[in-house]
Length: 253
Image 1 (tube, rainbow, N blue to C red):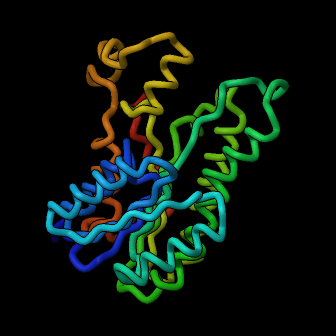
Image 2 (image 1 turned 120 degrees about the vertical axis):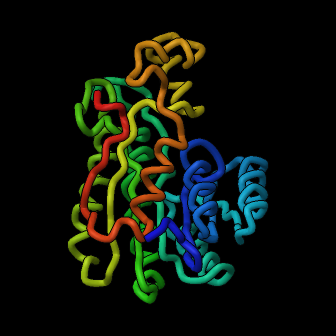
């Protein structure tokens, strides 16, 4: 049994950069046609689409605010029209909270962060299910965070959003198992992305993530490909029996 995703269509939100881009390319390498969603960066999205097509796979980019149901509906309809039924959905798009205490959190920030991580994952899962149920197999992967393990101080909007996203996954896998749809959670720790760099600069004053390598598990900061490789297993034929699980990708810390 191999990792082949030949004949399958994937939608990866936040797929133009960082973890999302790594996942999109990994799925394409394994044979899937890939739709990527992005919010603002047209150039990054176009570059990712070009790299996927260079692998011999079909690819399209869709600009949409994932926290907006109407945007999501138009995007899912577009993917099905352009590429075919969605059999892999990776809810990856996300934003960070500003690291303030509950007492000092702006209500607008709370709404924005929870909507981006939790509402969007619900909207897109709901919208993708009708076409996914027509496929031989379906997979939904939530890219959560190791933050849900500790739920540390000064991050309530993000902690709440990711906890809600995981609750969605734990509910959804029970509902869709009979339709041969697997739903799993991948929870990274610190990853070398633009968001990770901004986080470390804001919280530790570190300009270069490479400075943290010696203090990290296995002597390096986690890379986007580390996350992508877990996702590509979960959605592959090699995973026939794992659903409803959370996999931490944080070096065991």
